[in-house]
Image 1 (tube, rainbow, N blue to C red):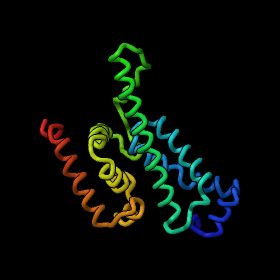
Image 2: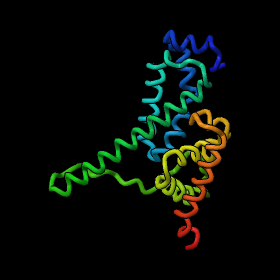
Image 3: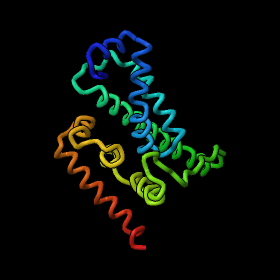
Length: 189
């Protein structure tokens, strides 16, 4: 229904009911994907709103070459990674300012991150895993998050990331290897 050309045409006509339906259908998908990348609830909420604003503003650019959900995933991932890059850049500038004596607002440290899809008994190990995910390359992290936390197939992830299934398999293999190395001390302790 949401990939139906008539529904997409309603979105392009700025039909409020169609857009509300779209947000209701994809809000959890977008939020959970973004949260898996940025690992901060409030930031994930802000970014999710930005995603839907961009979807609303750029629906005319949607050509239907991929599923609507695939297009929305791409926007969500791009927004989340852009947010992280800006945050890292700001952190470097703040560090530099602190070094030269200019006071900056201290950033709140996130000690316990909990993804909503993780069961209570797995919260501690999931928190350790998500911290480790921050240390692997973005493309490996995205593939891992989409497959392992969002439950998408390799085919869906290859569509979203616009690459082959073989490339996704390789990304997952490297992500697992990198995570195994990073987490080795956690599991051996």
